[in-house]
Amino acid sequence: MKKFLNTPDSYVADSLAGLAAAHPMLTVVPGAGEGADESAGGFVRRTAPPRAGKVALVSGGGSGHEPLHAGFVGVGMLDAACPGAVFTSPVPGQMLAAAQAVDSGAGVVFVVKNYTGDVLNFQMAAELAVEDAGIAVETVLVDDDVAVQDSTWTAGRRGTGATLMVEKIAGALAERGAELGAVAEMGRRVNASARSFAVALTACTTPANGKPGFLLPEDEMEVGVGIHGEPGRRREKLATAHEVAELALDAILAESVFADAADAAHATDVLDAADAADAADVPGEADAAGKVARAGAGSVQVIVMVNGLGATPLSELYILFNEVSRVLGGRGVTIARSLVGNYVTSLDMAGASFTLCRVDDEMLELWDAPVNTPALRWGL
Amino acid sequence: MSTGVNTGGQGDGVDRVDTLDLVTTRAWIHAVALAVSAHRDELTELDAAIGDADHGVNLQRGFAAVEAATGGAGHAGAGHAPETVGQLLGKVGMTLISSVGGASGPLYGTAFRAIGRALTTPEADGEQFALALHAGLDAVRALGAAAVGDKTMVDALTPAVAAFDAAVTAGGDLRAAARAAADAAEDGARATTPLQARKGRASYLGERSIGHQDPGATSTALIFTALAETFERRG
Image (cartoon, rainbow over all chains, first blue to last red; front, side, top):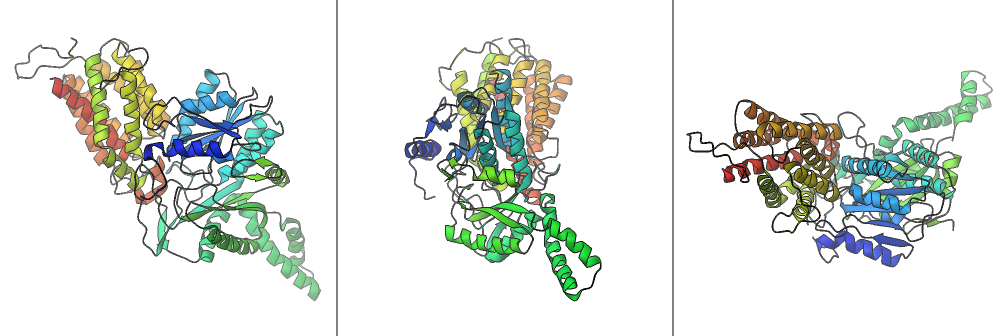
């Protein structure tokens, strides 16, 4: 293991201290110090006090996915984030403390990635917040990774890239003074509209373990990989950037939320046929289909994120985005906004995840709203 | 009774152990902490194969916090000292919930809390402890929604509780029941190897989870083995 660190035990605490030192708008509130890592139990909050009437967004999860979640604390996104040990869910006590610290009285939305540990700990925290602290809590579960089948045979789809979109869009709505139920509902809508898929070229190394979670031969890639160093769904021969983008987008666009994208693509073909029919002045079925197609075509607009998993250069992410752009163009999907970079990472894993979030005008407007966090900053 | 050992005399050279008292319970929890430390890397290796390589580290952190909170291993012990077996196990559970994280923190924490809540007298006999173990199992199954065969800690916990219960019902003492439970838990943990995971992080692997022993079932077996060895040492 080669990493910049002092000791593996102080990895999370030292990193959080650096985050706060670099960004005075954030404050790290230390935990009770139970356990080996003294960061255990702490949380990161906006330095500014809660604004009366604003619903607070609190997220959290294992560390190792930086900038998620602490890097998304700030105006327009989260009010607080609870980092756990590397790849380990935080504990209920720190979630409760974070909720108490940032609740203005308008309630708290927990944004929870769908992993058994995160779900159980946030569930316990929500019970404590409601029953013991009298805080109104809504939970938004993020489960966008289509590599995992959502069935009784699994713990359900994992929460990955869509988390950023939920936090950004619901965060913008909260900033405008929307009430608790509306903010949570928007978060759920974003999650329901977003799907992701990831491919890795190497495993990552956790500071505590010191060696890669799995070994991947030079000419192979891990397909359908998660963000915790666990192996993916299957292993395949390394493919070209075009093939990788196509494989990921095929998996994502097969989801029902994008079903009419295929129709729209088909409509474009029908449209061409109808135009051809018009040109030939041949009335008939193609004409009627053409009218329907004109009404529906181009209605699928998405926010696209091509996200690095930690050790992939930005240049490669743009190579992938270029392929995504070409593939979507041929499938009747319009890219309304795009984000390319390292946002939801898996320590030093080389690889990329692809997230598509189908948006309407309201969601798009909230996406464009001002945000000022260490990792996302625009519209100011 | 403070030793947890009744000297009734069975004529077979080994005395019956019919009471789980505070001293024995402390010794058990300390033995679990030692076992988790000793097997930390093994648990982590198992977790690396089908999970995220942190089970050993997380449980070690949790039981270190338990030792600090309950006064094991020379720690002064923070807060009000537990006076009953139930209070002690409840405190173990709360400490695990507040220090482990992941899925194993809430699951093990909830199990110990439920066992502790079920033990209302200062000490427990075999029948009471069997009932308490059932309460622990029920709580884990309710929280994790896992069934036998899902390749989780439930695959070790369920046969262990059944074996403990059966041994007590057949007239066995706590030492015999704990040994039966430990053996059943180890068998249960080994039996997870050919299974495909249906819960937790290993379920993401689908068929690729087959061929690896479940780390949670393995740590559950460690906990019951520590209980058996604690009684055997004291016997």
